[in-house]
Image 1 (cartoon, rainbow, N blue to C red):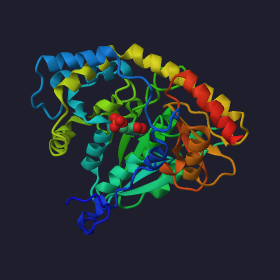
Image 2: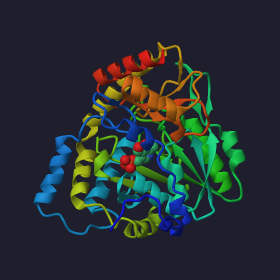
Image 3: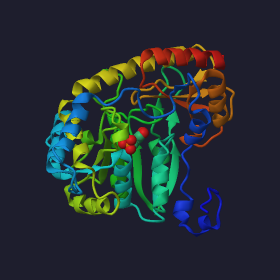
Image 4: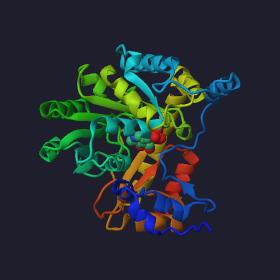
Amino acid sequence: MFSNQSTSNLTRTISPEALGAPPSGIVEVFTYGWGRPGLIPLWAGEGDMSTPSFITEATTRSLAAGETFYTPNRGIPDFRAAVARYMSRLYGQEFSPDRFLCTIGGMHALQVAMRLILSAGDEFIVPSPAWPNFIGCGKVIGAIPVDVPMGLTNEGPNGRWFLDVDRIASAIGPRTRAIVINSPSNPTGWTATRAELEAVLALARKHGLWIIADEIYGQFVFDGSARAPSFHDVMEEDDKIIFVQTFSKNWAMTGWRIGWIECHPSLAQSAENLIQYSSSGVATFLQRGAIAALDHGDSFLHHQVERAKKGCDIVCEGLSKTGRVRFAKPEGAFYLYFKVDGAKDPMGIAKRLVDEANVGLAPGSAFATGEDAWLRLCFARKAEDLAEATARLVKALS
Ligand SMILES: Cc1ncc(COP(=O)(O)O)c(C=O)c1O
């Protein structure tokens, strides 16, 4: 009989990297609260809108036309040309399609990027709080994450997270190979200034390090500008920078699992080989939908950014009223990362808020070490839900 026992001697025989792969810190609270009637789920990194029909229809047309065969590992030429068009439009410079390869979402792009530059025993620096997958993804390769806390000026509407470049510099050792920079940031909403990007780039150049740039929330900024500062604004063609990107957030395509990696064309063959031996490419019909998103998705994206901006105001203004909540107002992305004064156990408080407010939040322990009760709230949702969730949280926390 095949039992469902979760413990067996077999676990001792799998690779140490697989055994040591950290479970996601968000899953525990998700499992705790999942399925409760009336729960407002603000724990995951996705909004409440489904993919717009101009995208899904491009995919169904492709399926109907029989585009169901193996696909080029780099992505179909039409896809790579569409990414180049989109990037050229967004950054005001010419991009060659040779720089882009299609991946299974941003997560796979990160995996390919890390496998391109990290070997077992190499160190990589991650400013924290950080999206946990940077650390988990490096660890399964056997690389060693080095957590460098970010700075926080006074907590409050005028507070700001900032990159502590001196601290990063002192974390660099002989095995350091890379720095991961995620701006705008999940979970803090910190958005790097051009000067911060220049400072990291100077450090990377000085020490011969790679930068993995995760700018997937680059257009989710709330200061009225079209996009956040990017390494594209400050880099030279042959700088050691690899970008990970995704369709997930911009065009409400989290479940599609499609994104891209951008690297110097001289690395593209190696990246293609890594794709061959991991996913062997992304379905052509998904790429057709993605092309529609790139070519015709600007107004949908702008609508989402406007909605997130309003959502940000609703939750920030509401939670400030508790007098017990501290945060730096997010400059970008779609998360509020806040601390509950005097509380110590982030997982405990996240579960308590499920019980008492029927609101699902992610515990800060998923993003940073330390015992203070930080929580992450995703505000990519309709205003009524956010207003209701905020009212419930205010009641439970006051
Ligand atoms: C900072 C960051 N990078 C990458 C990703 C990965 O996105 P995808 O859903 O495309 O794998 C996420 C998803 O939450 C993210 O927050």
